[in-house]
Image 1 (cartoon, rainbow, N blue to C red):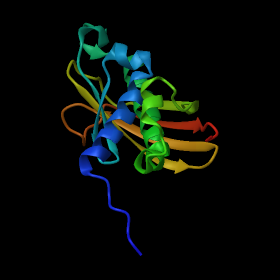
Image 2 (cartoon, helix red, strand yellow; image 1 turned 135 degrees about the vertical axis):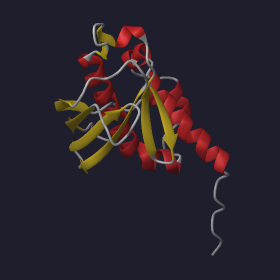
Image 3 (tube, rainbow, N blue to C red; image 1 turned 60 degrees about the vertical axis):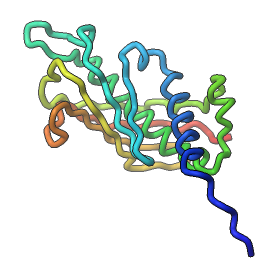
Amino acid sequence: MVRKRPEPVQVVKQRRDAALNALVSSVPYMQYLGVQFDRRGDELTAILPFDDKLIGNPILPAIHGGVTAAFLEMTAIMSLNWFWLWEDIETGVLDLERLAAGDLPRLPKTIDFTVDYLRSGLPRDAYARARVTRSGRRYASVQAEAWQDNRDRPFAQAKAHFLMPLKS
C-alpha cells in the first residue's frame, strides 16, 4: 500500500492563514476596532492594538467596557469558528477561493454572554484567548480572557454559549 505524500508545510500554512483572514475580514466591527489574530498551529490569540478611540473614561484613562466585551465576544466567536472548521481547513474540504470571495460559513449565534470586569483596561495593547469547553452539534460553550502586560493578570474574562449553525 502506497501512502499519500503529505502536503508541503508552506501550503498548509497558506491555507490556514487564508481561512483565518477570510473569517476575520467578514466582521466589519472587528476591522473598525483593529482586532487582529495571531495564529500558532490551532491556537489563536486576539490582539487589540491600542487606539485613543477605545478609551471610555479619559479621567483614568481606561478602555471602554463595551469595547472590552466586544473584544472578548469576537475572540470567543472566532476561536469557536476556528475550532469548528479546523478539520475542513486541514483536509482542504473548505474552498479557500469561495472563502476569499465572501462565501463564508454561517457564524454561531450568541445565546448568552457574561463578562467579568476584573480591573481597568489600561491604554495599551490587549490580548485575548478563548477555549472551547463544550462543543456539540447544536450548542457550544466558550471561555475567554483578556490581558495586557501579564497573562496571569487578566483584566476581563467571559463565558459564552452559542447556537451552532447546521453544517452543510
